[in-house]
Amino acid sequence: MNNNGNITDTSALAELSRLKLSEGELSELERDMEKIVSFAKKVCESAESEKPFTVKRKNVLRADSPSIKIKRKRLLSAAPRGGVLSHYYAVPRVVD
Image 1 (tube, one colour):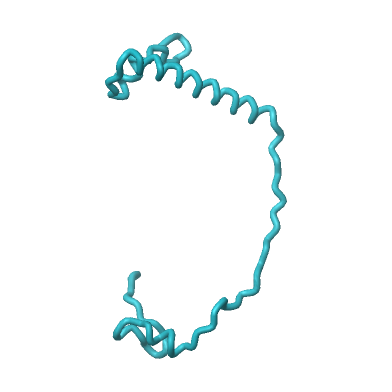
Image 2 (cartoon, rainbow, N blue to C red):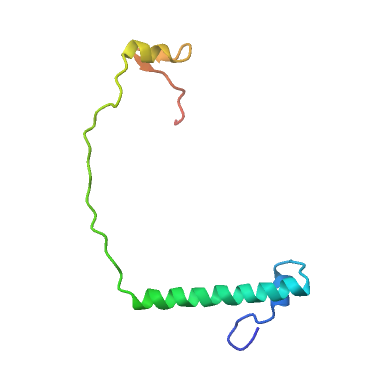
């Protein structure tokens, strides 16, 4: 690490990450990391310079109606054996 606290030695970073990299892979990793840091700096700079935008939100409601109509008897006939109780589906209790 240098005085600013940045890791400058890519091989040390690879070792901390438990990566076994060749010299070519280390130099490629170093170039990639420089691109990542550069991109992150640009993102931070643009975030600071831009005004936050607001989105006008509009609550859109729809009519609460079934999209398909099924007869109750037909629907309850699809329940597993013993799965109907007083015209309702019977399901196992999951909360005490």
